[in-house]
Length: 148
Image 1 (cartoon, rainbow, N blue to C red):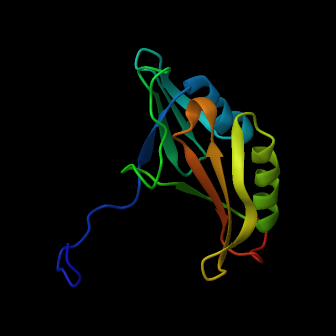
Image 2 (cartoon, one colour):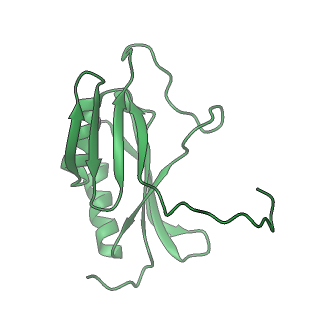
Image 3 (tube, rainbow, N blue to C red):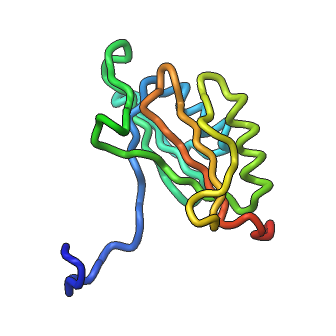
């Protein structure tokens, strides 16, 4: 709607996000083993898996033809550009970066660095090979936020 619209939002946030992946078992392992998310459901005949970090839920759907699909390219495709994940403290961001950069079939575009006006630090990683369509971004709220 246009700026200044009188419409009132009735939504309260994001319930879940669905990502199509090239290899469901590899993507599931990335979220559960590398990121520490929890599997809370599966639909093998679809095939799909449902994961959560306790705050956000993701549906991971496997492409129909694993041998013939196009990975996401933000310059040429319409769709989800990245998924921004929060961490509690800067130390958590560095820990996550170390875990991700060692994960099979994942490459990091850059390690933790200031983002935008410097209020956030971020890292970018792209899931390559069989799940190249996925891109993750992890953020901490600020460099000096205390650990809970």
